[in-house]
Figure 1 (cartoon, rainbow, N blue to C red):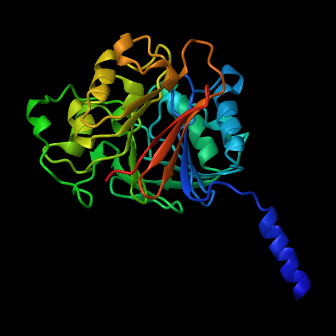
Figure 2 (figure 1 turned 120 degrees about the horizontal axis):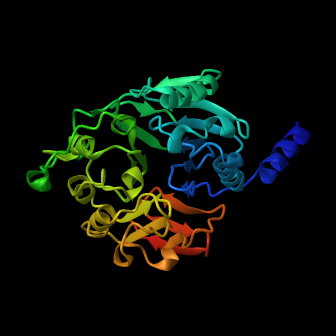
Figure 3 (figure 1 turned 180 degrees about the vertical axis):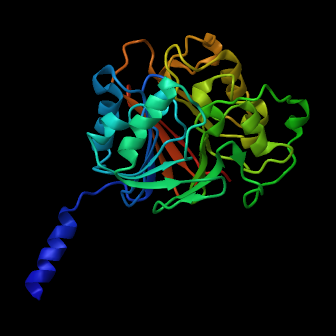
Length: 337
């Protein structure tokens, strides 16, 4: 018995030690697509989207490299926000590099045609060999340690405000709807991720009118600490009515050098009430210098992108630290009072 106890104790001491008190989020550069890796305090993982296909597996290699650095050997949940090339295209290549437990998506694609059909078929072939979960607005993704609430899916938003939300949104009165978007973007899975008092949102490529459905005439979401710029910072999304209602302390833009990061969207983000910091994966050539983040807060300041990312480590009290992997520059944001 004593020998067994000693063996168990030694095994405990030799187990990998990770930052057991933080939720770690890696915003991986996939050149204007999305790949966001969440690693919970107990080591469970959720990846949101997989970047582009092709390029000799560039994006799959980048995701696998970051996962390895984070101590992740398996993706427990892979959330595909919608079926566009820069979000779902990398699935087959990624599945060759790392095991994936459960695929989460919104069901069938609303787009048709050879390119859309081939893209969805390539994804479905891989997905259908594993566990599969279809989610609708109001559902939860059952990952340990954190709460992941689906607030939008299949073009529908949650009907009732979340706990503590529901205040009238005065910006809605001056915000006009735009043309109906029939594409997959409008079908995007949008999520609120919470860890203790820490709150962040990821809406995929949800477009303008669907954003308004979340916050107009009343804000159903409340406020957040971190806003992942929707649609890579394009002005088809990021309506002031939602960005300013959320009042994020920090915004992170997963743009490419020449994709996303538009002047209109970046200005909306930078002028949001209470914003304390804006971080970008690339310097946005589509935005004026004054609407880009300053150089220390940008991972790739030129076209010569490396396997790099922005890392966020959140504490349960709502405080968090953001780090630029290019220069190891970190900034800590204290919990809200």
